[in-house]
Image 1 (tube, rainbow, N blue to C red):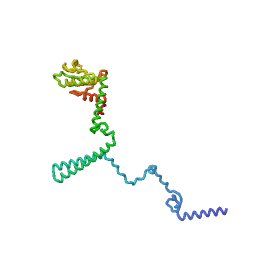
Image 2 (spheres, rainbow, N blue to C red; image 1 turned 45 degrees about the vertical axis):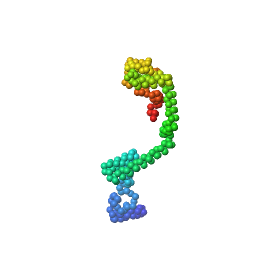
Image 3 (spheres, rainbow, N blue to C red; image 1 turned 135 degrees about the vertical axis):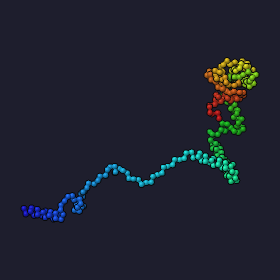
Length: 275
């Protein structure tokens, strides 16, 4: 019992001291007595997610946009050079002072040197590129030209003989008294008929005669139906009886070699490969 009273007296004295120093009040946030305790007088402000996710501003210097490469720089340079040459030429013509004329002469010398360099390089590359060298197919040497011409002539003859087995030649003419070339063309075709055994269909446009083809037929309007009426006399056409295909060989006087060449081109050489 005495212990309890002593305890109450002890706590009562502590309380009186505390109250004597300072009146008890809430809150304690402004008091030095609570300093150092791990209590929050105010709840910490929470950062929003949007603030956490925002990247820090970059301090790097922005890169300059890359320049696109110039299109056709060689063309632009050539146009600029040509303009410079033209300007120098016109200046020398309009004001032919020694300085202006000499300046234009210097440019002409430069052009000649560049042309020489280009030609030399062209030829050197051609030596090693036979697929680009026309000398492979068409010899330039005089000795080779003769051999090439003979081979080509034989090829044309063979082609004409093969064509003559399935096709013939239509010979459109007018009376020899009015058309002297028609008479000569008849002579050429008569020779080819005997030499190559090719059939010749002679058709008179005006009902006249040709001494080399006395049995020629008169045109009753069939040439107009075939679209051949407007062709002059003489005119030769390659005709295929089975397919009824007509290919014009040419108009005017043609020699035997010319007929062979043209028939060879028409029947053997694809379009675009002749040269």
